[in-house]
Image 1 (cartoon, helix red, strand yellow):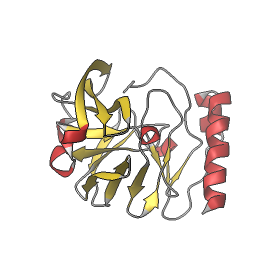
Image 2: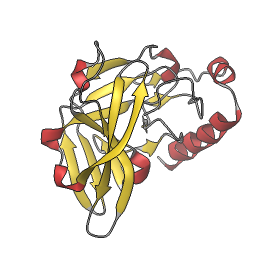
Image 3: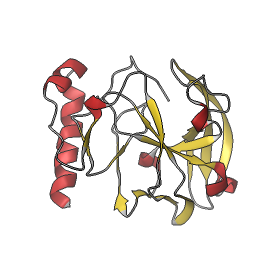
Length: 187
């Protein structure tokens, strides 16, 4: 497991150096049970997942769901959107920040605050998504880099190292990952 994490971190670092075209040309061939981010579509696709998603923030389980939706976007690890009913929404405070994705529409953000910790714009939602993305209406996505831990089933995820995207990296996802490109959705 540590070797997988080390390999992922090396790939993250490489993603910041190379361009998206260079990265695609160096695509890692997925093994059985794995997915390549370069096989994901553009525009992104949404799909339901029954995998258990858990999010820990400041030592508290703030979200647990087996009804999440994955958004799969070319060159990036999946982003998991969780229904609000499966989130302790008392930790999420609406933020003034919004952003626009050319595909999904306008996102609204949340700050996350507990008794001892606060992160600005650490989660986002699409209250009125564009046609084709209704599946994520009022679902919430979290940047794993601001959480204590995020899990897909029982695997702790690594955060996508990008300023705008909130992808979740597991052993099932191979890249290399697009690093700091600004020509896709900015979440």
